[in-house]
Image (tube, rainbow, N blue to C red; front, side, top):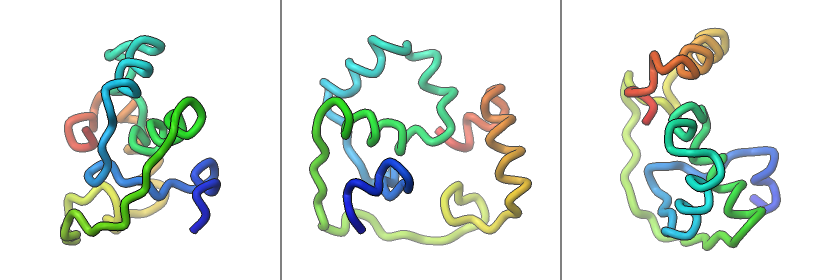
Length: 100
């Protein structure tokens, strides 16, 4: 997968990425902490922001073991319609605790 594909496909998984203080301060100073929680694809959004205004380091080291379970946000089996409903409700803070 080419790194420039980041703009059209998310391959950054939040549970296995790290953000430095510079990126965190950059983001919070521009949109505010209260708005960060409303971003549905926060890992992708942070990665695109880092790509546009900084740099991204890719490490191919396996850092986690992935297990599939009913409550997975990524990879969980659900209908496409249910996914859009959850994303819409998340904007209202209803599913925020299950995503963040």
